[in-house]
Amino acid sequence: MGSLSALPVFFRILHILSAFTLVGGAMAWRFAAIPGERTLAADTQSKVGSAAAAAWRPWVITAVIGILVSGIYNFLHKTGLTPVYHAIFGIKVLLALDVIAVLILAARPNDANRSRKLMHAVIVGVAIVILSAVLRALTLR
Image (cartoon, rainbow, N blue to C red):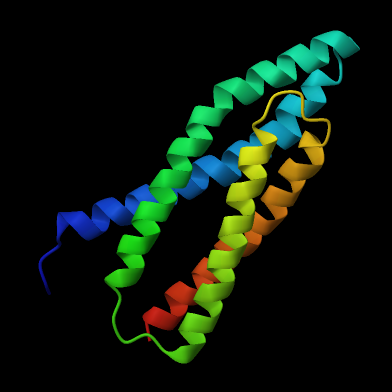
Protein backbone atom coordinates (compact mmCIF):
# COMPACT_ATOMS: atom_id res chain seq x y z
CA MET A 1 0.00 0.00 0.00
CA GLY A 2 1.43 3.37 -1.05
CA SER A 3 1.62 6.45 1.09
CA LEU A 4 -1.24 8.90 1.07
CA SER A 5 -0.14 12.31 -0.20
CA ALA A 6 -2.01 15.28 1.21
CA LEU A 7 -1.97 17.42 -1.95
CA PRO A 8 -4.05 15.13 -4.23
CA VAL A 9 -6.52 14.57 -1.38
CA PHE A 10 -6.79 18.33 -0.81
CA PHE A 11 -7.47 19.02 -4.49
CA ARG A 12 -10.03 16.22 -4.72
CA ILE A 13 -11.87 17.57 -1.68
CA LEU A 14 -11.67 21.11 -3.09
CA HIS A 15 -13.12 19.88 -6.39
CA ILE A 16 -16.01 18.05 -4.74
CA LEU A 17 -16.82 20.92 -2.35
CA SER A 18 -16.73 23.45 -5.18
CA ALA A 19 -19.08 21.33 -7.30
CA PHE A 20 -21.31 20.81 -4.28
CA THR A 21 -21.44 24.57 -3.70
CA LEU A 22 -22.37 25.32 -7.32
CA VAL A 23 -24.90 22.57 -7.98
CA GLY A 24 -26.23 22.36 -4.42
CA GLY A 25 -26.56 26.13 -4.22
CA ALA A 26 -28.44 26.21 -7.53
CA MET A 27 -30.76 23.45 -6.30
CA ALA A 28 -31.44 25.19 -2.99
CA TRP A 29 -32.07 28.51 -4.69
CA ARG A 30 -34.28 27.05 -7.42
CA PHE A 31 -36.34 24.67 -5.29
CA ALA A 32 -36.49 26.54 -1.97
CA ALA A 33 -35.67 30.24 -2.21
CA ILE A 34 -37.52 31.07 -5.44
CA PRO A 35 -40.78 29.37 -4.39
CA GLY A 36 -40.49 31.17 -1.06
CA GLU A 37 -39.99 34.50 -2.82
CA ARG A 38 -43.18 33.94 -4.83
CA THR A 39 -45.23 34.29 -1.65
CA LEU A 40 -44.05 37.90 -1.30
CA ALA A 41 -45.33 41.05 -2.95
CA ALA A 42 -43.89 41.73 -6.43
CA ASP A 43 -41.65 44.62 -5.38
CA THR A 44 -40.38 42.66 -2.39
CA GLN A 45 -39.69 39.61 -4.60
CA SER A 46 -37.32 41.66 -6.73
CA LYS A 47 -35.50 43.07 -3.70
CA VAL A 48 -35.15 39.67 -2.02
CA GLY A 49 -34.01 38.03 -5.28
CA SER A 50 -31.40 40.71 -5.88
CA ALA A 51 -30.19 40.50 -2.27
CA ALA A 52 -29.88 36.71 -2.54
CA ALA A 53 -27.97 37.07 -5.82
CA ALA A 54 -25.58 39.57 -4.24
CA ALA A 55 -25.00 37.26 -1.27
CA TRP A 56 -24.46 34.19 -3.43
CA ARG A 57 -22.22 35.75 -6.09
CA PRO A 58 -18.98 35.61 -4.01
CA TRP A 59 -19.67 31.93 -3.31
CA VAL A 60 -20.13 31.27 -7.02
CA ILE A 61 -16.90 33.06 -7.94
CA THR A 62 -14.95 31.25 -5.19
CA ALA A 63 -16.37 27.85 -6.17
CA VAL A 64 -15.63 28.50 -9.85
CA ILE A 65 -12.00 29.28 -9.04
CA GLY A 66 -11.83 26.21 -6.80
CA ILE A 67 -13.31 23.88 -9.40
CA LEU A 68 -11.07 25.18 -12.19
CA VAL A 69 -7.83 25.01 -10.18
CA SER A 70 -8.58 21.61 -8.67
CA GLY A 71 -9.88 20.21 -11.96
CA ILE A 72 -6.71 21.21 -13.80
CA TYR A 73 -4.55 19.76 -11.03
CA ASN A 74 -6.53 16.51 -10.91
CA PHE A 75 -6.41 16.07 -14.68
CA LEU A 76 -2.70 16.77 -14.99
CA HIS A 77 -1.89 14.18 -12.34
CA LYS A 78 -3.83 11.29 -13.89
CA THR A 79 -1.96 8.68 -15.91
CA GLY A 80 -2.93 5.96 -18.34
CA LEU A 81 -5.96 7.74 -19.73
CA THR A 82 -7.66 6.21 -22.75
CA PRO A 83 -9.21 7.98 -25.74
CA VAL A 84 -12.65 7.13 -24.33
CA TYR A 85 -11.71 8.88 -21.08
CA HIS A 86 -10.56 11.96 -22.99
CA ALA A 87 -13.79 12.08 -25.03
CA ILE A 88 -16.01 11.89 -21.94
CA PHE A 89 -13.76 14.34 -20.09
CA GLY A 90 -14.04 16.83 -22.97
CA ILE A 91 -17.84 16.65 -22.80
CA LYS A 92 -17.69 17.11 -19.02
CA VAL A 93 -15.47 20.20 -19.34
CA LEU A 94 -17.77 21.81 -21.92
CA LEU A 95 -20.81 21.15 -19.73
CA ALA A 96 -18.97 22.53 -16.70
CA LEU A 97 -18.15 25.74 -18.58
CA ASP A 98 -21.83 26.02 -19.47
CA VAL A 99 -22.87 25.67 -15.81
CA ILE A 100 -20.25 28.19 -14.71
CA ALA A 101 -21.47 30.77 -17.23
CA VAL A 102 -25.14 30.21 -16.40
CA LEU A 103 -24.57 30.48 -12.64
CA ILE A 104 -22.53 33.66 -12.98
CA LEU A 105 -25.37 35.13 -15.05
CA ALA A 106 -28.01 33.89 -12.58
CA ALA A 107 -26.17 35.62 -9.74
CA ARG A 108 -26.74 39.04 -11.31
CA PRO A 109 -29.31 41.32 -9.68
CA ASN A 110 -32.78 41.75 -11.22
CA ASP A 111 -32.61 38.70 -13.50
CA ALA A 112 -36.09 37.90 -14.80
CA ASN A 113 -34.98 34.46 -16.08
CA ARG A 114 -33.14 33.38 -12.92
CA SER A 115 -35.44 30.43 -12.21
CA ARG A 116 -34.94 29.01 -15.70
CA LYS A 117 -31.16 29.52 -15.53
CA LEU A 118 -30.96 27.78 -12.18
CA MET A 119 -33.03 24.84 -13.44
CA HIS A 120 -30.70 24.58 -16.42
CA ALA A 121 -27.67 24.58 -14.11
CA VAL A 122 -29.21 21.87 -11.92
CA ILE A 123 -29.99 19.56 -14.86
CA VAL A 124 -26.59 20.01 -16.50
CA GLY A 125 -24.85 19.80 -13.10
CA VAL A 126 -26.46 16.42 -12.42
CA ALA A 127 -25.33 15.25 -15.87
CA ILE A 128 -21.78 16.31 -14.97
CA VAL A 129 -21.92 14.32 -11.74
CA ILE A 130 -23.03 11.26 -13.73
CA LEU A 131 -20.17 11.75 -16.20
CA SER A 132 -17.78 12.10 -13.26
CA ALA A 133 -18.90 8.72 -11.95
CA VAL A 134 -18.30 7.19 -15.39
CA LEU A 135 -14.82 8.74 -15.54
CA ARG A 136 -14.03 7.47 -12.04
CA ALA A 137 -15.06 3.95 -13.08
CA LEU A 138 -12.83 4.19 -16.17
CA THR A 139 -9.77 5.06 -14.05
CA LEU A 140 -10.35 2.22 -11.58
CA ARG A 141 -9.96 -0.50 -14.21
